[in-house]
Image (cartoon, rainbow, N blue to C red; front, side, top):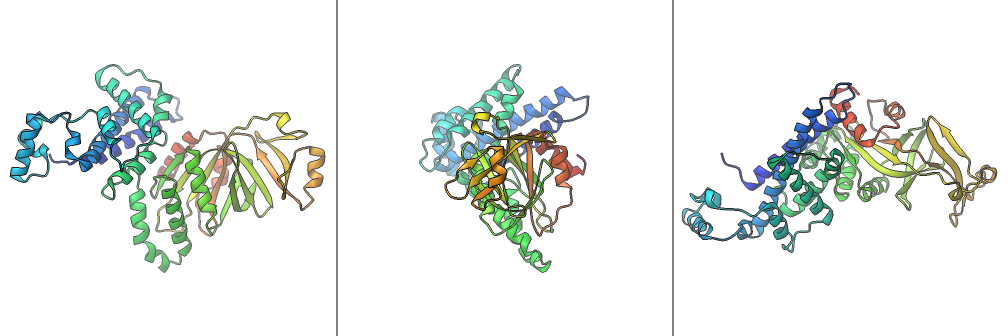
Length: 415
């Protein structure tokens, strides 16, 4: 058997995240008989494979910088192996007769050595996750694991995006992403002429705009894939870029509003965002919790779909003086107006409706209830599913559960 660092590491990473998907399928299984232990086996394999893949790829990076950095110490075995490698013109010391006597650095030490390489930037958040994985892995390998499931899920949340971004930047083009992002970029170029002959220039433009926004937002996703992103800054970068482009989005909201064309998006304070719907000349404001992306196959007329998950905003009457709280279909909202100049806000119900007729104010609806706030589609492209009905029926569903069920829906055609 012959595998280099890159082949070994990428294979383990992909196997790890495949096991994580199987674990999530069982975790969010709606049947009454959930196979509890079976999902733990998938989670265990996810931890072991992902940690192994990361360790091997980190050793690839430090080996690229200097072969000597991967050894725990440069003893006589290492020296003799290096001589044998050079004499026999081998590619690696691990091809020598002394390969079984060579000891590489521990995972923890490999991270420390990685951090001394000037060209490598390891974020404190990613380092924290790597150490958490190492702890889980050690307990699994050497004792009886008793973990809090939600803590492991937090470690894995968004991890594949961080790893793909980090390893792509640190290793280069030879690294192949965990997701199908690399293939998405390659196939976009391949199918460009085919789509032109089908009259699908809008699909080409849409995919090109989305792939650039995905890359700039440090999101890793391929075609025919579903992914939830909870990093608000990354979500903001992605949404801002696509709304600054010249593609037009339509939307339906979780309270049943069919809001037509969306032309503006803006991030406000405290992770609140607002979108402007041109057809009814109104701004809708919400607190962002996550986005769930679906990228369809490239070579058809189907639109990418973006789901926005909103978080709860606590209603404090003192923050909205005189406001009238509206509740329909278990969705709480309030109507207010904001001055076009000076941004003065008026919440008082007796004044709001009078001022809303004044063209010096813009109409706003602030949504307070967490849930699947809306979906966005690209106008001019098709979509087969009744997404407005899906978000209305599943409006209170957690975004992670929805990601898993949507993935299965699009693959298996059943929700």
